[in-house]
Length: 358
Ligand SMILES: [Fe+2]
Image (tube, rainbow, N blue to C red; front, side):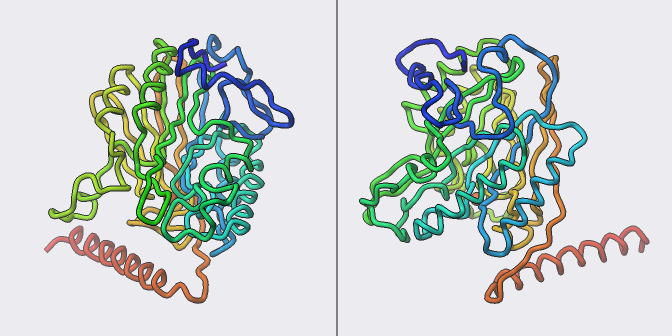
C-alpha cells in the first residue's frame, strides 16, 4: 500500500485492488508491467540503498527513428553498473497527442509501452502535456471522441489515476499530474497547474509518509529558469506553460514536508536548483530535441539516482550516444544543428587560444 491514511482525499488513491487483467497495485496505479511489481506492503518498513532512473520526454515516435533512439536509451539503462530498482517516467511519453490523429498517437503509446517493457523493471508514468489527446486548438480528433483527453493513454497503459504515490524500501515517491484542464475559445485546453484539490491530496499524502525520505515527480517544472538560460533580460521569469502557475503553493507543501527532490521534465533543458532545502532537478530529455539532436547544448539523456540507506539522495545526469536521424524535410533542424556545432567549434577555438596565452 502507499500507506496513505484514510481521509477524504487519500482514500481516492487506495481504491483499487488488482483489476481484471490490469497489472496494478493498490495505491500504485501508475505502475505498468516490468518484470515484477514492488511488494505491496513490505517497502514501508524495509530499508536499504537502491538506485532508480528518471526518464523523461522520450516522445516515442517512428519519426526520426525516435523508437530506435528510445531502445538505445533502454539499453543504456540496462548497461548501468548498478541495476535500478525501477524507472520514474517524467511525461511526454509518446511523441504527441495534442496535434496527432488518434490511431497514430495510439501506436506511439503502444511503442512507448513495448520499448519500456524492455527495461525489465517496474516503471511509473507521469502525465505530460503531449500525453493528452486533443486538448489543443490543433487537435486532430473530435472533442466528443470517446478517447478524448487523458483517457486514451490511461486506458492503453492501464493507468488508473493520473496522480498517486508508492513506497520503496523506506522511501516515499509521489507522482503528480500538472496538466490542468481549461476551457479555451477553441474548446478543451490545459495549463501548467497542480490545482487546489491535488495540492490538498499531496499534503496529506506526504504527511502520511512521516519521516520517510520523499521524492516528487512533476512533468512541468516548479522551479526552472528560462530567462537566464536564454540570457534575455526582457524574458518573463515564469512564462505560461513553462513553470507551474501555482508553484508557490506547491513549494510551501514540499518545504513543509522536507521533500528531498522534485524531478521535472518538459523544458528538455537539464537544470539543478536547491531552494529552502528542496532540490529541483530537470533531467535531460531522453529525446533531446524531439529526436532532432541536442537542445540548448544538451543531448539525449536521463538521470540516475542513488537512495542511500541513511536517507541521502545523490544523482548523476547521464547522456547516451544517439546520432539524430533527420527526415528529408527537417531543414530547420539541420540549420539549428549546424549553428550548435559552430558554437561548439568556436568555444573550442577560444579555449585553445586562451590557454596558449597572449
Ligand atoms: Fe517534452
